[in-house]
Image (cartoon, rainbow, N blue to C red; front, top):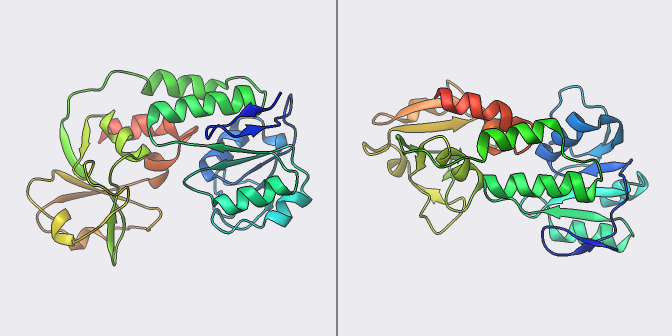
Length: 249
């Protein structure tokens, strides 16, 4: 019987996946940390683990679907936000089963990965995922710090509402000041960021690569902190590292 993915689309999943292509960097890391021998393809943006040696199928937004088909995967892993619907459709029309995840919060990420590993891949729940749930599936702490998280500059763009990053920060006591914005990643003016009622601006190294010389110099009223973009946006094994790194802030 086909199993519905996170969008409710029936997918003919294998009993136990042995040839997997991942189109999502964080899920590539998750598969590689769990059963590396099963991973046969990934995007150019899949940078963890650093020694990953698999076929590359271009980027998350311009997948070389013909290269994916040529790898004969028994399952392709995608994400609603990170990948294009047209690429998913082309793969399915070519007879390749594609499992699409939907992740906009920490609880949703944990549940989606539970289903991915247990139902879609047939591997059971890995130890790192059980540890991530232990660390993150907890009551919300009191808010201690008001933060903003730029993801781009020229123009400045920030983490807005209904995002995994915003929910992750809330679970360590940070309040994203743009959480109530109508957009998920809205454009803002620098003055909207560099203001006295924001305690801290977190400057990640992806997708825009903020550095000590590129980012902090723009702020005169608000403190800044360079952080790992992987800790803020990658669900998977990075969640375990992120808990320690973010609570230290």
